[in-house]
Length: 401
Ligand code: NDP
Image (tube, rainbow, N blue to C red):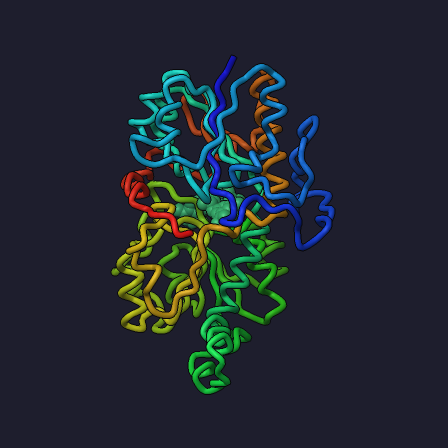
């Protein structure tokens, strides 16, 4: 019998939803590059339901228990007294989500001698010390593509929101005002602006495709160049270094994974390379940016706006400066966990569990670490090492009811 520990975010403050705004989800046949959607043998949930919070249990309880395994679901993940910590000693599988990450540091992996699989119900496994996973033969897998388009939509929303000054204008309405001049004093059109993505993977490319009809000039930097036909189709300008891209753009969006090569790549020094008044949107990982440098750049006006939904650590403590810095459009980490995305990553998690329990190979496109090395998609997109340093700070978070 295996113990499966599943760490999920808390239910809504009013309890698990009993009804929903819409009756169904649109049917999607395949991902844009032809990759097939998650294909478990069965699912025990209704797509469109809340699956990502504790009561939703990713729709997995019936399946896991039917095999005779123990299934523990908790949101208690930080600090030595957390539920997660209590179950590490005999956990075979830890399932976690980037939105509410169960940080699997080297210390925690050392406390989990039976751990075989760290499964990310989403994309981005930087909450796992990948070096420690490699050293301890723990497989790390994630549900590649499950929410890439969800995030790309969020990025476009945030770019438009910042440039057009949406949130402050909305706030004037809520305050009972009709303060047009206050609203438009920071409002511009995106048309004609230069927008660049650091990384043109699944999300980055989808962002470029979605911004093309806004008549923006499109730029990108990536370790591997896109096919020439794609560059031509979208009229892309490629930059050999991300530093070169920063100076060429009015809007920069970060869409690369967090690994030692990208940690804190936006800092006081690199922000000087941006145009004054640039906008920065980061839905990839909070730690790609130096926290205080971002706040300073907004205060000085070097950045005209910053938005995103990723922080470090998560949840962010009440005194995290990104909650109160000027001209920001932050959300908690939600872009990849719309109800639409939840249905896909819950199905993908089930598919990976089925492979694990039936001794079948996990799809290459889902693998990050296997057999003591970076593997599958992880070997392409990550570098070796660890980016979990400082994650214990997440224990400082106090819930707001
Ligand atoms: P992909 O693997 O499709 O894309 C990642 C891209 O980043 C690849 O093209 C990779 O390049 C590129 N890359 C890696 N390192 C660098 C570097 N040093 N400089 C420039 N480019 C680099 O993943 P997705 O697009 O689906 O997701 C990207 C990231 O977004 C995830 O890793 C995750 O951190 C974050 N994410 C956030 C979500 C949210 O809810 N906010 C949800 C989903 C993802 P190459 O392969 O050419 O080496």
